[in-house]
Length: 285
Length: 341
Image 1 (cartoon, rainbow over the protein chains, first blue to last red):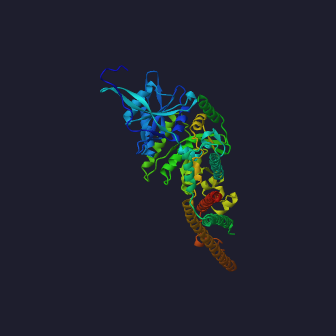
Image 2 (tube, rainbow over the protein chains, first blue to last red; image 1 turned 90 degrees about the horizontal axis):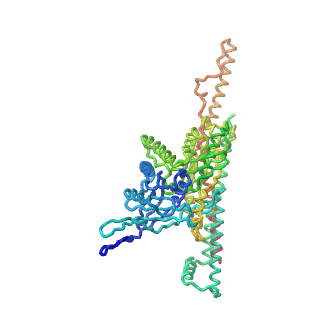
Image 3 (cartoon, one colour; image 1 turned 45 degrees about the vertical axis):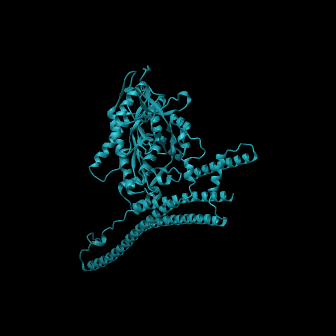
């Protein structure tokens, strides 16, 4: 960029800390669309739906792909389709609005600038999400960009895509369990008992690790870290101090409640089978 | 990526080419992770309201593959919006077709509240779908149960024998005894398999957070299950009331029936006595039946469908209570052991 003597290339960093948060459904949707794309297309492009949280984070909740045609110098987007899908989605969930657009592929290309301009006509500050399905650099990179205006003095020169922090923590995916979502095939959904077992094993492993760490610090093998020590002491002290007898009573009471419920449900079951016998076996001769 | 598309098209051609007269029975429902996430998102966003949506996929052999889905907007109780609902559906399917999503309806999903989904509307929707599609399945998702850390997803189908009976609307005792149909036979639960494309599994493997504890663990180790159990018990009590009402209806019917039969017997005897007298006097004997007499009118037998459905619901609640109680036991013992240490 040639700089004149007086004017300076002004580059406004983002004054507000804009960041984005992506729900796992969006990633799934994008990958699924990428797998189903028509053969001649190299990448897929689509709209991102979501909402703007009060603290300035863009919450990306849903997405849909929009058919497009891309050649070396031209990009054509099916705008009717885009509007149709938007109105259909809004019929279900009117709170989800356009917050940006996504494309697969690494980095930002020339055509992306045109598409970004189109989307900035729809919403104030669109977020551009790139999902690298080609796994260049051997890793999955999902990046979010917004466009910043570069101006020289008073004149607008160009727009720059600047990366914004992206929160990829997937709470819903964790709820389902990554085991189901990670592998290509799961034969059976885990029952609740198996899930309970897995959780308890993890808890046990955590407790073992903590004990081992404390032992190591006491014996001097590992240098003590004050923050970890404080965390541990906070956790241990958060167990309410009840006398053993009161605690036993508490546990036994809850146990008895649960046993009562089990008993009630078994009685109900017996009643059901009895009622069924009476209903269908009765015959009028 | 092209291979996946080619494989999908090959299997479709296979299905189209082999015209089987009888389809093999449905054994497994194969759902994609994408569909599970979409269903969960839709149901939890609108809970506690109940929502529905459409399932799309492929019907291959004994496996029903569900590859995509879309939600239905909440329907107002207005007749003119019926057409709008149909328009929405057509529009969505057309748009999805343009991006190469399977355009084939294979069923629908709905959310439920604490497992109270066995209603007559469900059966009627099933019958409606069954007329157009050869095999359809209904997926039930329970958002309140999933807060306990369990993925409460079920695939249901009506059993064939039940469907025949329902179609002919014969729900009296004899037919049911004939077919040996009890209340467990109405709904069939089909095991679910989950499949994901290789691309998604690569992404998820990368994106999996490194922490040893996940949100599902937090959900499962929660000690307070009382609100859930309380609501379960409330529903259970309501259902038992309904069940006892149905029982009373049956008792009433049987009592009426036996009374009517007793009346018929006395009338018949009187007729026979009259006939003997007439024969002795040389007159024509009167017929032994008189359809115009009200005591010969056949009493309608109350349909057992409602009682069956209610029984199903009650057993469902019992099962839920059992499983949650079992989990609570483990948690309580865990707490006890931890405290002792």
